[in-house]
Amino acid sequence: MQLVASDTIYQGLNDLYPYIFNYYVASYVFWVFLHYTTSHLYSYYCANWSFYGFTLFPLNAITPWCKGMTWIMHKGTHIMEDLFLIIGTYFAMIFVKYIKFKN
Image (cartoon, rainbow, N blue to C red):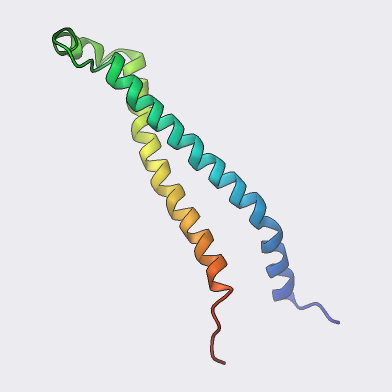
């Protein structure tokens, strides 16, 4: 049986599926965890729900750790959006294999 170039490409993509799937799912779970944890830490340490937290918020908000937590929350949101698109595309590629097209 002669191997066609498109079969080789298809086989190469099939070999990459487990790696791509595991990498992006792990990244997505990592950023969800970071975003969730940082959001709670920010509300506890930087924007405390008390009179003391309200009066000191302008000073707390500009500290390096609060700015860092803000960056993680915003960056995590963008990365989760991008990873959702990538994972959705991955599943769409899998489901397309099961659709029968008329020739």
